[in-house]
Image 1: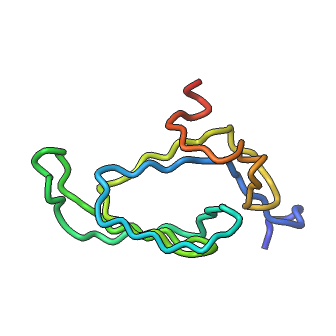
Image 2: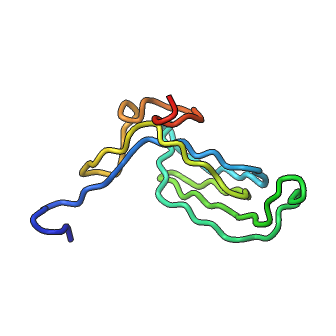
Length: 114
């Protein structure tokens, strides 16, 4: 329930780019005719020490599962960086259309790094 006196939920949303580090075992299973990759959830499970740990100075590797509206992406990685491409805005919905996102982007630069 929304907190009174509000009658609806509000969400802080912004378009973002996720860049995973030291990726291996990538599996992509997507059926999206409209080219959207909306992420419903992200889960991670510890799988152990990276096989190249002494070169990357990391001791934990995770299996990441990104559940999408039209499929799933799985991979092993030591982590990721999230780049927010715009200042987050408070909205009534959690979804951004392509125009609101600034179209498809793989930019590794956030709005605060212009």
